[in-house]
Image (tube, rainbow, N blue to C red):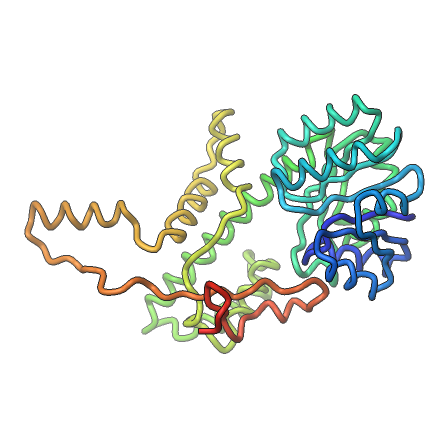
Length: 335
């Protein structure tokens, strides 16, 4: 089939490459011309405007939007809606909030356009391993895009499915990411505990490798953890800053609204907030109070932390290139 992809970053660009390898024709558009040129070199049809993008598709047109959630996705979908015709399909494969997807489906249905929300997991490994996709929307729309989904998935009949009406795809991806937060937190705490008991557990990298085979907690996440620890179990070059995409927050918010207990996921989200603070104000308050009532010694800040940013990998780079060998300082200078 011929399908269009808007947003050719590390996810969208790799998805284009996998679709091309699956025998599909792909029209690619991105705000950055170098990204368009990159997928053209892979065999895609490049477009330099949304109008050109739509013109190069064939009815019923299928346009997959893979841009940041929020305003960029909203703007792109609404612009596409103005250019597309009755019966065409718009797919949102980004990390949109499920309530936005429900609303967009209703708006587009009023314009006789199909909307499909695809919660997409796979990250930088998707090109090689395939993508896990949770699909929401009407059955007839999902059937139109199914050939592309089969090529993007790990296998034609595995790793993807139509999970419900509009919004269901992004809702299940939201919960998926909440679970991911909890799993990551459990691994992180367990490995920290073992490193603290270094007199007994002398090599956490070895333990990770042992657990990968036959253990009840073996998983792809453990495989990635083991790879990260090889040759550098102390992770000396890394800061403890951990970003959050927002989906963990949405999971906890929805659980609160429905009265469903999710203590592990909630705690893991709160822990990420701690890591995003250079210094915890609450911790400073505790220090000040202890000093005030007991006269205890406290620690003062002599200088702020100096950290650097490891840049994201480019589309079509291998997962191994995600391992940082050199950090790039904030502001763009090497440090």
